[in-house]
Length: 94
View (cartoon, rainbow, N blue to C red):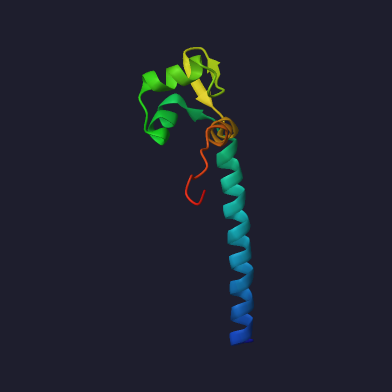
């Protein structure tokens, strides 16, 4: 029976590789999450608004959305674009 000892350096290298793999998997999971549509209820909760406000935003063309049957969905890109479009720069320092 052969016994191999792992040195401290070997252990550190293994930990670095595991951290790298974990970071890659975390990034992959984030990208996958951003591809999934956001339901109207999730959007309302995320933005802290009423369903009437969300309807108003859709009617006024403030946010792009998808309608499939009776269901409303938003893409993360549409949410981000809406926020960027309505960003107000700070007046401080003028």
